[in-house]
Length: 91
Image (cartoon, one colour):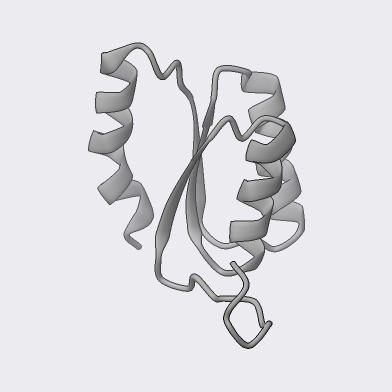
C-alpha cells in the first residue's frame, strides 16, 4: 500500500474483500484499506469480532463496507458473498 515515492496508495472506488477481519492481521488490513478509501467486504467466522471491526471502521469514518459471517471452506458461503458483493458495493 506504499507507492514507489513513499506515499500511501489510495483505493478510492475499488472494492477489497478481506477475510479474517475480526482480528489480527485481517482486522489491521481491513482498517488500512478503509483508511485508504476502499469499499470493503469484511468477512470472518467470528461474528462478535467482525462487528467490532465494522464499528471501528465506521467510527474512523471508513468508506462503504459490508460485513458477513463467513466460513470459507463452505462453498455456499463463498457463493453467497460473491452474489451479494456487486449489489452491496454499488450505490
